[in-house]
Length: 246
Length: 253
Image 1 (cartoon, each protein chain N blue to C red):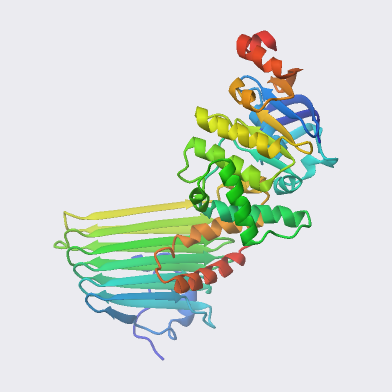
Image 2 (cartoon, rainbow over the protein chains, first blue to last red):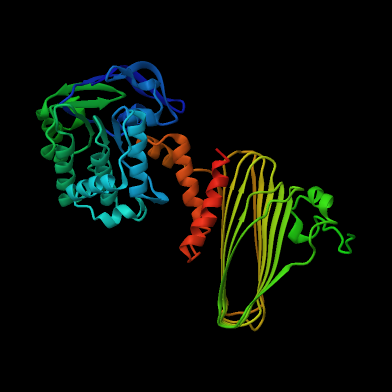
């Protein structure tokens, strides 16, 4: 589904990714762990197409398409979902309006009919219930006045509504209390653990991986994948730290 | 028709950002003297004014309003269709009265658009609230000059102004000039003014959910300009003036 080959990326003048390669197939859940500053968020933003994150070498192919040639909104329409570490507040724009416009823009780009208001509300209610999010919150402006945990749950509601092929989740577990973490973990499983979908979890902690069991764990350090393994690698990291393992 | 009132100059504080060349071309023709409005004691009046289109390209709306004791006047303005457009409002608020204003400026090209207000709190216990939002592209200039004068015995006055401008191009100009003249000692006067650009982080967030840039931009500008009309109680009237503002915003894309 996603093939990343020898990816190099800079932010401003600084080289952050230095030859990262990674292949993610449909049906797989991958976790990327690594020390602060290793380039984890840069990887997410670079794949999402954030302005200022410049690819200097290498490639990323998503479902046979050159991902890096697409505009950010085209990447979304192609089926890529980026879960933000710090979801952005958009004053004056309601969650429901934002998501309906987003979903219908994606559908239009794929040559599908837009969802009607009634169809959309039914879908939104279903996904909000899955993440135990009050529908009233979805009527409020996007992330405005939401707690850190509510913002992260809102990201997962958005993921449920948009129903992407590949989710890149950047520290979705940070800022969550134990109950919210369980709800979010179960949400990721319900929405994304399917044979035709895949997930890349960026995380610091084992606790999310107890809920969303990864098929592969990678250690990112110095802008490259320095070690890959199965779920047991995360446990080893938790016990021994990055320096010992990587 | 000859005019006895001399053309304003830039030394006149209320005209410092005006397009005086444009004004000079029509000075003999523009109706002189303001429209007078009196809101009788205890009553509520709501007016929405969209700056009218003028053949000359110069459009001026001038209001002189008296809000009698305990009355409320809600005024919502939109300045967009003029080469030089000016909406000026002089308000006298009596005891216990309230003045609510929302103003929107949407400019592009070489337009010069301005809203100029003077709110006179001459009596106690009166309140006023002014919200102005400007969206400016191209080489447009949008200005808000808002004076609040609180007389010595106008105690318990509560007057506030919120002025925000969004510049879509580095060549556009926004002026925000709040001016407070307070002679009473027990009053609340708050004002805030900001000039900014569209939030790039929000634009990327919206793109990451699949919104094309022009749609994301439109949603953010709609939300920004809607602040000016949120105080308009009548739904149909609010939707009507918002629709005019949105049409103007579409023209900026």
